[in-house]
Amino acid sequence: MPLPKEDRIYTYSDYINWPENQRIELINGRVYLMTSPSRIHQKTLGKIFYQFANYLKDKSCEVYMAPFDVRFPDKNEENEKDIKNVVQPDMIVVCDEAKLDEKGCKGAPDLVVEIVSPSTAQKDKLHKFNLYEKHGVKEYWIVEPENKILNVFTLQENKRYGRPDIYSQDDKVKVSIFEDLMIDLKDIF
Image (cartoon, rainbow, N blue to C red; front, top):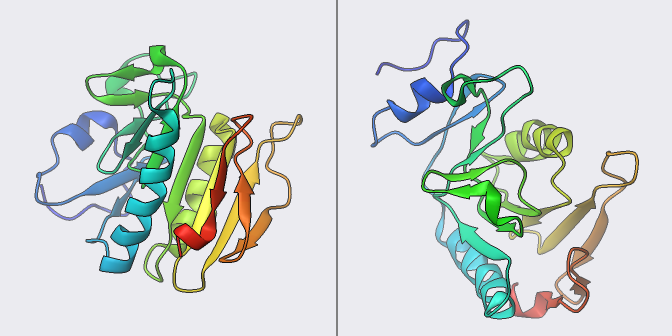
């Protein structure tokens, strides 16, 4: 498939037929090309994943890291192939087993983690932020490894994200979707 056309809206049908050597995400039918993550990105992701995976051992929620497709259907998209939002968050936690299938996750994960770099900052902080809020992701983490900063957005009663809780490398983070999980950022950064 050639490079995406600016004036075209793409769907999950296009997504599954995209060449495997080109990783993409679809947000509102627009194609976003994905780049290879840096070493610091992967190291940070691995440390976060390890903490969640260790905590979730023998629990009903599951944790996955990219590449792992998350499909966000809108109400008017009756056929799965018409879905216009397919992303690969760096890490997700899903507590509703019904959302998981052989293709990944269909519907909002309970928690999403994105590790930003200069090339992904706009997509993660704007486009994905709006997508996750719209579809009801309960907790959204934006990790900035270069600055050793974590922004945690929690879905409020009005179905919007409030102001972020901002943490640095010296802080511990209470994960809101679990009663007893604290993440020590010294172990991450």
